Image (cartoon, rainbow, N blue to C red; front, side, top):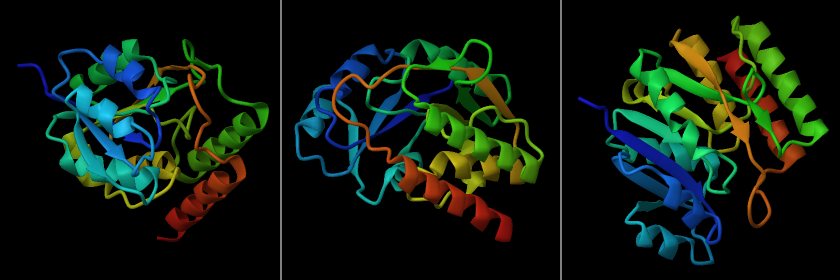
Length: 220
């Protein structure tokens, strides 16, 4: 029996990008959960066109994903962005990683087969610094840390005990997976450029949030 797959997409003013993403999501996906940050454009209307489940959260990306995970009914949960940067044809890799027994499957732009068209050198440097720090502190071998294309088993979500409201949610997942001794695998992923509009990521603001998350996890 095939596992049920839930896809969670946080949105904020993505009316042009979202329908492009939703059109490509395979029919075998059990449910698509849109967690909207009270968009002022027609994002929600677009989500309704595709019969997505819509919930609301405006506390940040992390809070939106956590809320979506709590609502998800699937055995496998895929988290992804609404800006057309993630390739839907990588779904089989994300699903397969969980099907063969891993708890968390993380997309990586920095292993063979991965790459990015949307990462300036200073963000690449910051990601490298953070991933090296996390690997040293928790004895892991991650190649990517700040990337939001991932899958998790429903059981793993319960064990991770996630609390981050911000863009540091990916870092928190990686650290908690290490702390909980969960089975983690990375799969190659290519990050495309955002199709329309400007990204929500603010390099230094969100970099500081990631750093604070790492420090907090050292202390608890």
